Image (cartoon, rainbow, N blue to C red):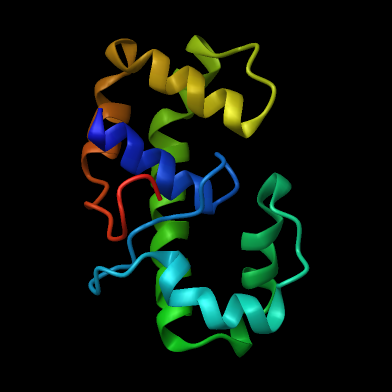
Length: 134
């Protein structure tokens, strides 16, 4: 279950769930911590819905700190891996899930029915930094 929550956290930063925490590669910082100053400077007025905050950071990535760029790259890679590995599972198990949050809830609810490829991708997600509940 903890791994699924970690995956949810990583996908959240990609706009696929409601939370925006993901482990930054190699430094144990959360994306929120790594990008806090950059977010305030470039994206403070951006709504949280639909992954708009992440898109704002990505749109400004040439201006971001090295730590934030590194965190975004790690999140993007984790998201791409998860989408590739779990996409067929989502199509099969969650055909009526019409939003990113609904898809995440569905895949979490169906964790025992996931393909080995999806389970492996989820298991490869690193332990996140930050507080419990982030």
